[in-house]
Image (cartoon, rainbow, N blue to C red; front, top):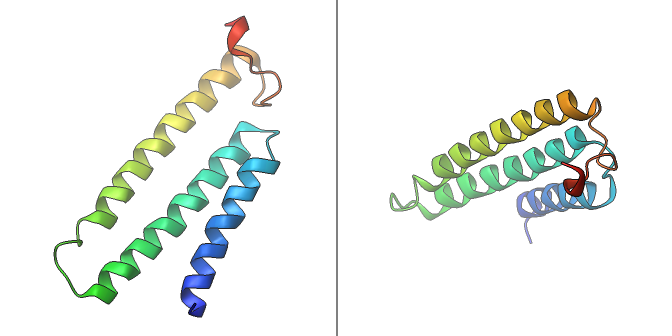
Length: 98
């Protein structure tokens, strides 16, 4: 495994472990998701550059568009949760009480 592949796979795994273990605030979960999407975007961009193929050139932009949509939906949920519950702690968010 090359050092570049190791760096991006470790960045993805760090984001995944942060999402799995640090589940106190909704904002920290969103930041972990964005870190994972950023590492996937850079890895996919480097993969398309290494292949020298124009067939996969739109894939990183499509992933970036989905990442922007995910970020905007996450921030909208964060604002809605902060307005209704007064905090972004994940322990206070209960779907059964809505």
